[in-house]
Image (cartoon, rainbow, N blue to C red):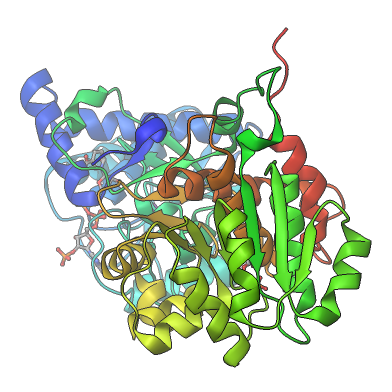
Length: 507
Ligand SMILES: NC(=O)C1=CN([C@@H]2O[C@H](COP(=O)(O)OP(=O)(O)OC[C@H]3O[C@@H](n4cnc5c(N)ncnc54)[C@H](OP(=O)(O)O)[C@@H]3O)[C@@H](O)[C@H]2O)[C@@H](O)CC1
Ligand SMILES: Nc1ncnc2c1ncn2[C@@H]1O[C@H](COP(=O)(O)OP(=O)(O)O)[C@@H](O)[C@H]1O
Ligand SMILES: [K+]
């Protein structure tokens, strides 16, 4: 696995790898399960004190396994510091080993625990700690566990700190069947897990904090990470200042193709995003009736009327990167444009109707390409249902990358970028204000511009896709901070794209 200049992004690991790392740590450093549980409980108690220093009444829901054990350790720390502690457990016995010992220690010291009874409701507390299930959960919650999670959702006004993973969420995929704790903060132990960052798991986790429990990075040395996490902190390093003697020829020429009748706006958004992300030149090839509006909005974009593919050829000859799909439509015009674009060997970003056309044709050779499907488009490209795609977004992105031998950005909450031979990346930015028409067109132009201009030595499709998806999501967050999520427009991202793509000058 490569990952080029993205190699220093933080990694997340599947639960099986975390268990191996735990064994490596225990065998090398002489730690045992009780030590790790003590560290986990203490880390959680410290985080709780940091976030909710005023909390006096602390509720802890404890499951039958080691996640519950972490909860009993925290409960005892809270109790011995004078807090009122309410432990609620499921009917099941705490299984064995370290968890059993932690529960006994809490009870022996005078701690109290009650079995959850659905009709009794929940006690009033200042903060709840979710220690029901962690990485040992492999099936949907049912019975008392499901009732308890539902009660936490409906009858609880207090914030929730989840230990390791919100109970009900599959740590590896982020999937849950609708019954899962919705945490305000999740403290992940030893390493982040992919399910905390994408899809439903991202929503359930809230803010994610990682505590390594003192284990050094090398415990993961022989383990393939599940994904790396792209965060806004990485952006300044990826956008070095431009050379003082730079000229536009160094920053590439993006040709945006699309905007069949009735869909001119999509192409305008794509082209303006490419300009605002720093492409040296941007051209737009679209239907004749859209040309005046595009020129009026952005005279910087060289906008041409193209009625058939032969008129496109000179534009293709002049371009260094193609962005095709926004507003392309599903008619003959769009199909002819796509054929002409795919006949070149230019790097290309394919979105929207271009992807639907590819799904219909079952084309498999996309060349040097980034495809940017939302889950619906991804499902069509894979011949699967949206639910199958969303069940494990990282694996779905990997399937797409394998099937089409190209880079994939699977969009949505926690966009996933995958490419053959690369560790997938998950974007830890973006917000539901971005769920509005045209937002994907901005992403297409953003990635195309990065592909065109390099840094300056040139980005791979994978690098441009990760940088572009992060830049786009971070611009969405910045725009949402300035006025809120509802009513956020794709064009609101333009000033933010520009600001974020320019490094802060060093003092
Ligand atoms: N690994 C580490 O490095 C460290 C791990 N630590 C902590 O341990 C956690 C993992 O602990 P774990 O392996 O005991 O699993 P856990 O998540 O508590 O659940 C398993 C229990 O739940 C049960 N169960 C499962 N599904 C169920 C369902 N749907 N409905 C009902 N029951 C269900 C399952 O029963 P079974 O499936 O065997 O029938 C079993 O009894 C980890 O997330 C972290 O918090 C830390 O202490 C520090 C170091
Ligand atoms: N809830 C969300 N959280 C984060 N990002 C989101 C969310 N909803 C949408 N987005 C982002 O907004 C963009 C929407 O793209 P897309 O669905 O193609 O819209 P359109 O087809 O209207 O252009 C994607 O980049 C997606 O990742
Ligand atoms: K949990």
